Amino acid sequence: MANELPNRLSPSRSADFEQCPRLFHFKTILERPVFSSQATAAGRLTHLVLDELFELKNQDRSPVEAEKLIEPSWEVLYNPLKSRQAEVGSPLESQIRNRKGAWAEEILEGTPEATRAAFDVRDMEILAPPNSLAMHQILKDTRRFVKSYFKHEQPELVDPLGREVHLNCEVEGVQIHGIIDRLDSTPSGDLIVVDYKTGKTPRADQLDDRFSALKLYALMVAQNYERAPVELQLIYVRANVGNGIKRLPVTKQLLETAGKDIVELRRKMEGAIENDHWPATPGPLCPYCAFRNECPEGRAFVPDQQWTRARQTSTAIRPVPRSTMPGRPTSSKTSATAHRRPVIHEETSVNRPTKSRGAGRSKRPSNTGFWVAGIVTGLYLTGHFQNLLIGVGAATAIIYAGSKVREHL
Ligand code: SF4
Image 1 (cartoon, rainbow, N blue to C red):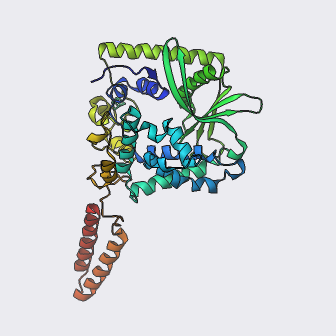
Image 2: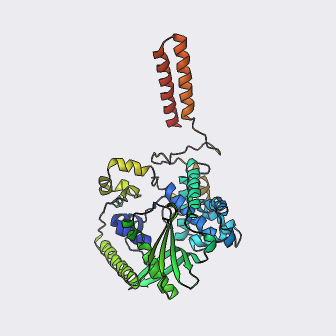
Image 3: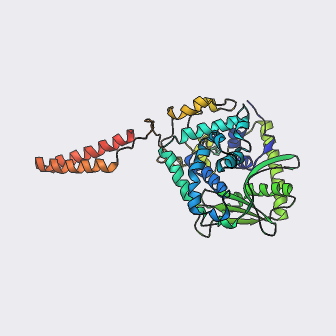
């Protein structure tokens, strides 16, 4: 088992360590796969769509055109390997190149990227089989997010300098790598780093934390473009009008502090590796942690009620498909049939396990049907036997049986 730090730190890995060293250990050192939830899938899909929006001519960047990009982008998210069929210069082609930083055929042969791509395919197949409730929910949420984005920005007025920009930089020997959603340049040549967010809009006292990754991006831009950006922007696409764009001016002090912080964080990581010490530091994000079921401290920290609520909206816990473990690339045959395997989800209201029933998905009988049947039967029996108790009893039995039938379908 590898017990080494990655050569390069990314803002998200750094944020994991800051949040909880044990989480970092699971994810980065043990390389345990983290499955997508419906919320993360909708977030990723929204990012793809917003990125693709800027492939269109300025005057075409409308809500209607953006909506048309959702289903093709879903194809890319769902099966990035499929986009090998994309024509050069097409939106799908640019997506696969941007997303993986390489052509699909370049990543097929036994590389970590190939394993990662195969994992992504399986992950989506298990989370949201074609036509499943999960798939429809992800598409629905994405439509809502993309529509809402237009409340905050007029994309026809924006000319990005780059999108999904991969950057590396080095601070006192610490290598950092990150991908910036969008880099804008103002008419006067000033640079602005933009990051899309599909989560909840933070409170004012949470904002500084939310900017921590962008501060590292500012460092990367400063090294790669020979001038620092003037501003960092977070665009919360779900926010109300007037509250979606959060801005932070970039100062010399911000850059210096970001540099010092990342060096210090790297030293702490090295200490943790040396002593093999990965303490759990529970906090409000524990309910959304992919490893919470293996973490007694995290479970003890969050009241049971909150676990239940969080489970309804966060990561689906599924068994690790052996063929998607690091170093075990998935064969195309396995990939194609994955959605027919039994899938164990935690029981959630938004992510119910969907039973495979051939190409189409069966619809569960509606509650209303059982209520109507119960009431009609109850009335009939009441009249027939001239006894209200018999009628009420029959109606209750039918409605109760209906709810049990629904649970099992
Ligand atoms: S549940 Fe909380 S404490 Fe446990 S690993 Fe996850 S983030 Fe850390």
